[in-house]
Length: 398
Image (cartoon, rainbow, N blue to C red):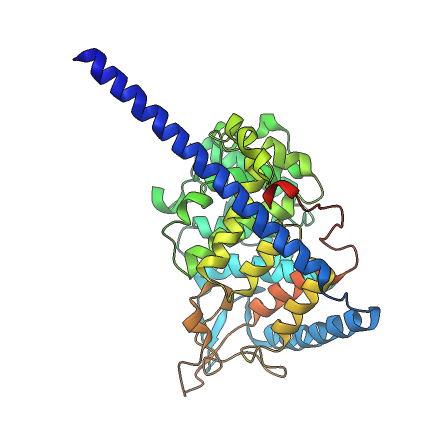
């Protein structure tokens, strides 16, 4: 009986292994075809002329400056971004670190250096000795989503960021993985945030020996969570995680090679022939493609997929930026209201929340979601922004 059970178990393991490998190959071929389709599309669109690029960038900058002027006069508390009720009372103060960081990145990408420096100085004041707060006036412990936002900001390497990273790493090492004073589900370092922290810190010159073991052993979990995520806040955090990886490794591709999830290993090399590169590249392609599948109308998700596929050409960026500028949810002469759309931050809410939900204009949104997206697309609009013609269409994926 035992030999029979042993043979049966061996057969089941072998069958499962073959099925898993076949699925990985099928996924690789699908990703390769999808990537190639976007590459062809991005190369077939007539490239915008110098004048057209300048006009689009000017339109984006004009609206940005309008929003920034209004944000500066009403939506900053201690220099950090908040939403307001129509009577001027603040809302969402305890989410400020995340969205202040995204506003900061938008300002950097748009070349508004003075405004970006002021935004970063305000963010810096939201921490002490490596412990970061949601906002100086928020008593709650910081959380994982705030940490993702902080890493989004630090990916731009603002002044003093390396020292802040070292203090944060020392805090995590001393506190056995906790970066805040909250419970484990709130303030404990997940493998995914550990990986993001490692990539950003390594790209900023922090030596490996200064990284706590938990950070050195971090790995991505986003691609696994996307199987049950629905459009909304969790998808937005997954998208930001993918963006941090793409951003932090853009000028230093070697970082991407070094930062592997422990289960990738030889499996990636065994499926790379199918057409979408090794499993590390496939992972980001699959993640961003899945985000588009989850919310096809989300402009940030579509930007990410094009960027991960190497298809974010200036002409593709011009199309997305034109779409952004024509969205009625971003008025030209004033900040968005809840009678323009119900979503406070358009890219983090379900599609239905981009629609009007109230006839009473009693809430004013910051418009930081426009600054974030405009910054990313204006950067990609430049002739040598985020696109390289060297990305080849792979005949194996056809």
